[in-house]
Length: 367
Figure 1 (cartoon, helix red, strand yellow):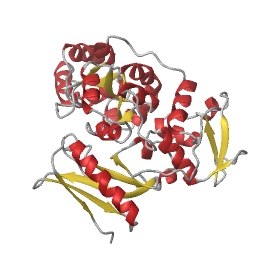
Figure 2 (cartoon, rainbow, N blue to C red):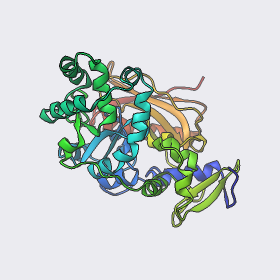
Figure 3 (cartoon, rainbow, N blue to C red):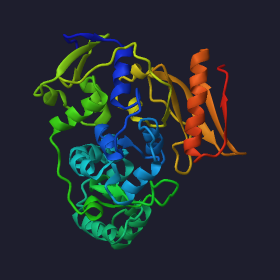
Figure 4 (cartoon, one colour):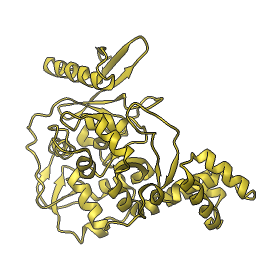
């Protein structure tokens, strides 16, 4: 959509994203405060939020996030784009009702949803809520129990339906630092002691722009999965810019946009990082299609992308084959200053992920 207003180039938009995401300067704030500022961190891979916070918080101690998850003030729940996000308990309860239609729409398109089309799930879900209130259960376990109780229905599909259609969280110890556990879930009401209560959609839009703006309506919709947000943004007092292609970009009236020439430090991002996934148009971060990461096992968070001068310039991976080895693979030549900064940040993230273990850093020459 063409729009009036000042034009912001890709570099200016990239610097704004880095600033809002805590990637321009590491910030001094608490884990819950940053999670709410960013409207959570994508975290279907349990280790990803730890690496993401390390790149954003000064002197980040992973025990702080782990403790918050253990005391249930922070949880992992399927929310934006139907993916697991690490959010505060307060945000989980406020976001889930808004994301429920997105989750339901996605489930309806799956094989499990098609098997249950037209089926009244009320009785099965009543039983499921009782089962997960006894203790968190994996989808496979819940599906087996429901299949035995309702033999005329497909138990596997019932287990998946419950995870999509009911307000649930994935329970600890999965997601704790240096620990693991099965992907077991329970209801938000059972885990948090309160039912979900939706924030206004206008508040969701404002929260998104605070953490990701300036951005288009299409960007906001891609971030959360909701549609028809133009009807919402038209009712809010927002500042309007234009992208170089004429697309209207929206922002909070008092939100600052950094100078596009402000220096941007090297940052190591985990797979599925907010800064890359928060937009329909990811060109501000130097990427077109989604950056696809190699397959991972275990807690994850040990591979991703490298930002140099604010754009994706390399991928990285930490392996433990014969000692710890972190390999950086640039997509093109790195200048001398950038190469030194990449080496230094690679050594730092390796120390964090290995808890101080000596790690070899290798920066591959681009082909």
